[in-house]
Length: 119
Image (cartoon, rainbow, N blue to C red):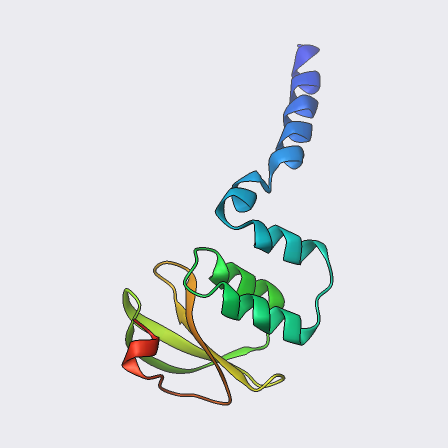
């Protein structure tokens, strides 16, 4: 019975040590970006660079938590995409929730992207 607390402690240490390993495998730049403070322009550049990659939706939510306003839905991605507007930075992101990816980024308030941009 005295072994259970020891095993629990070891399991917790192991969990916290490797919790970001899957994220590092998927997209190492996501871990690097979360480890340091980035300017708004650096965040936008990183999101633009990683659009279409798995995890870019998570990155978007982390960078602009609470600042995104849905302004439109249109065909694209894997069915439908949602256009999210960030009023603070005047940027619109087109987001595919099926694959959790950003498919387009554009300055200004864009209610509908060109079909070729959100495929």
